Amino acid sequence: MLAVLTIKTMRMKYAKLLFVLLIVLATSCYYDKEEILYPESANCTVPAISTFSGTVLPLLNNRCNNCHAGSSPSGGIALDTHSNVMKYVNDGSLMGSVNFASGYSAMPKNSGKMSACDIQKIQSWIDSGALNN
Figure (cartoon, rainbow, N blue to C red):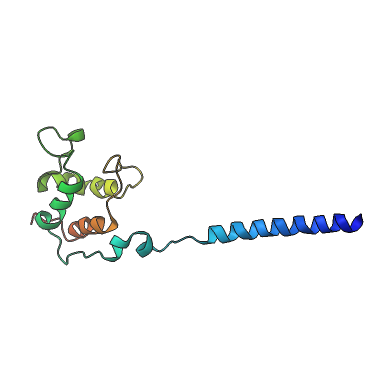
């Protein structure tokens, strides 16, 4: 009888050990490399000189200006001209919103974040003086 209990106890210990090992193995298969998770970022080409008309405005037209342009832009925020965009560049809300930063309204609303590459292009334009070019 004692031998049967010892065998059952050993089986339970091995079963618990096997369960723990399976959990460890299952959670260790995590990819945290940006180029694997976001392949478009690895192929990102940010122009040496980002321009408003050639780089930034097309991005805004594609991701923002469905709502933030025209005669009655959403929230009263128009992003269809350089002077309109500069209001939000100067107060930091353009980059805060596209980066989904805390304290800013994440944009595009109810949509996925812009790609890291597109955000880099906008930041590059701002870093180079946010010229109307």
